[in-house]
Image (cartoon, rainbow, N blue to C red):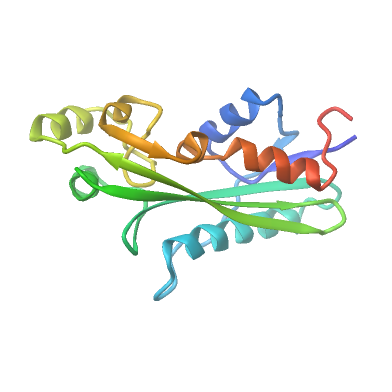
Amino acid sequence: MSKLILASASPRRLELLAQIGIVPDQVVPADIDETPHDDESPRRLALRLAEEKARAVADDHAGGFVLAADTVVACGRRALGKASDTAEARKFLTLLSGRRHRVYGGLCVIAPDGTARARVIETQVIFRRLGEDDLARYLSHDEWQGKAGAYAIQGYAATFVKSITGSYSNVVGLSLCEVDGMLRGLGFRQGA
């Protein structure tokens, strides 16, 4: 029987996995330093964090598949993390207003035999120009908290999205097409 450990505390990732019939046996958030390295690109940051999370959890959970992910919102070469307060959330959303940005989803799966597969999925998102009333209304709710780039595409921020190219589920937190392919490619079978 394949055992799956999700190395994430994100309820969105659990919900996404449930959409494709995957229920992790355990949820074990990885406790790692997520500080970007000097001159680290947003793409490389997403990949490194996913790999480090997977390894941190796999070290203590031999015999199971470990799935880890990280989402990085980038405007140019600048990575926008999780806003620490309303002022920073406003700053991020103002930066994204009327512009194209990229969402990098780092994924890493480690199989029971130690084989690891990792990749980055890129989705391009274009926001419409946001007015002061848009920002005030959005920031008056807590939806921005704990979200890369200070927005949740599956919530009210969907009204900001002019267009999207690539995986929608990647922007939510986990590219389901890639996760399914990586797990099956390494031999994972739910309930098998």
